Each structure stands twice: as structure tokens, then as C-alpha cells.
Length: 367
Image (cartoon, rainbow, N blue to C red; front, side, top):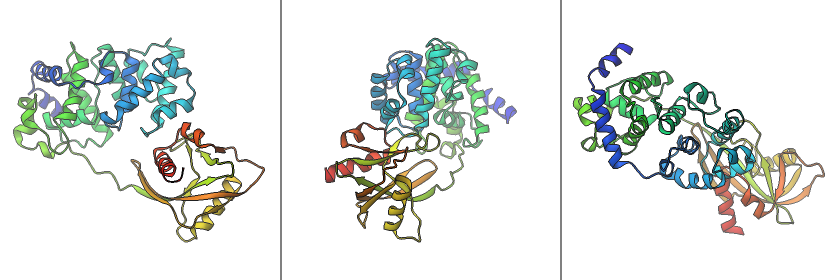
């Protein structure tokens, strides 16, 4: 494939491609809060947030996060609970934990200055090749590739690359292509322009080829195969898990909450007691057994769920049946992962998106 890629690259004039691409970007770039300066910390935060999340969704979260943690020092010294609360609703919470861990390393090892070399910045937790390339090129003007899904889609069409972009090994081809084409005078705008082009013009299903600034360089357009690219294998069907969730209230008006384990899915977030349903057992018995064994709690639980909710992750789907319950008996031995919280305290805790939706619905109906 390497010789084939070199042959395709040889058909493009890099300077002309750069001029057309960057010229379009200078006119059409969106006004985004992280584009107002070249602060590497702000760019870093935005790039982590933008992973697997749309720009329009990220903007309000970015503003809120930067208000609370405007500097590397502020984020490094913040309690994890506060960081997760600020991240609440964005999902993929490991991104927030890795970001804070890496920021602490920058604060301690690099005197609060984000590294400006590929080797050092790539050693930070959660900073992969794309994030490293984005920070280095946008903040520091280093001509490093920043290859995300948008960039692979654009270049697969421009260069007629038929490698499966879902395979990690394909990224090397696209990184090589960017290294050949990137502007050394303005790598920041070049990389951002490729991403912007993929987001606005060279879209997955209906590319706006007549509006494309690099149409004259595009092999797929010339061959009429732009809708067939990129090649991407479909993901396997996601696993479906039936969950039973219960909101238990005591006589003081407090709610039973569970802290998830420190490792794994949604680590360290708070949730209402929730567990996987066993298909061949009575629901009421399952809930009572679960509360007794995991929380030392006995409760009177309504026989029917008051809410049904599906929550989709990238690799699985939760089908959640939500019940209400009232505390009837409490053991003196508390479980370390459990606590009782008032309504006001629940509002302040970092909850998974699914449980935040449940809580909002509960409040609107019953409080």
C-alpha cells in the first residue's frame, strides 16, 4: 500500500492543495470558543471533549468547564468529584479522569507548561496521536498530523484510499499523507481546515462536492465514487442489558445512592441502586434481595416501574426499568459504597447521564 499511496500523493501539488484548503478555511471557519487564542491548555480541553461528541454539544460544556478550571493549576488541584460533576452529561468519563491525571503531571513535571514535543506530549495519559498532533499544530505551530474521522474521510476521497478506516493500521497511511501535504508555514490552519472540511462539506453520506474548495484535487470526485468512500466496516451489534433501578426514600426524605467502583464503566459516579435483571425470577424478589445483600436495606417497592428508559453506549445498551421504594428497615452496618442524600445533595453529585435523566423525571413528577 505504501507505494500505491506515494503514487497517489505524487499526483497532487501540495502547495496548491494547501492554498485552496487554507484559503477556504480563513473565510469559512466557525467561531468556536477554543479558537479565540492558541492557549495549549484550552485547545487540549476542547480536543478531549470533542472526542466522540459533536461540536454543538461540546460548546456549553466547554464554557462551564473553563469557568471552573481556567488554568492547569486549577484543574490539577481540583477534587475529582468536582471535575466529574463539571463533565456530567458529556459521557465517556474516563476522558475527564485521564485529562486531570495528565494535567497534574504537566503541573508537577513541566511547571504547568504543556509540552511542545511529540515525545513528551504523547507520554501524557489519554493523549494519543490525534490529540498530540492537534495540540502541537494548533497551539505551537508544529507540522504534526492530527488524523481523526473527518480527516480520514476527506483524504480517503481526495486520494482514493480504499483501506478500511475502522482498522487502526489504516491510520498510518493517513498520517503519512498529512505529513506529505501539510503546510509547514501554517500547520494550525491546515489541520483545522481538514477537520472543518470533513465536518461541513465532505460529510459521510451526502458530500457537498460542488462547494468543496479542494474539488479539483479530489480523485473520488473525478471518478464519481465519493459516496463509496471511505471504506468502513460496520460495528458488531451492541450488547443489550436489562437493568432494574430503584429510587429508595427514607422517612427523612433522603435517597439511597450507590458509588460505582473506581475502575471500569462510569467509574466513581453516583447512581441509584441498579443491577442486571434475571429473566426467570420475580422482579419484586430480585429488587428486595439486591437491596438486602448490597445495601443492608429493606424497602417496600412498587410492583410496576414508573419509568422505562434506554441508554445507549458505544458498546452496549441499557434497557432500564425504574421503580420507587420506601425504606422499611435499615441495618446498623452501612456499606462503604452507599449513602443517603437529600434532594439538594443529589443535585450536586456527578451522576451518569441515564441516572440524571431519571432524577429529573422523578423530580418533575413527584417533588
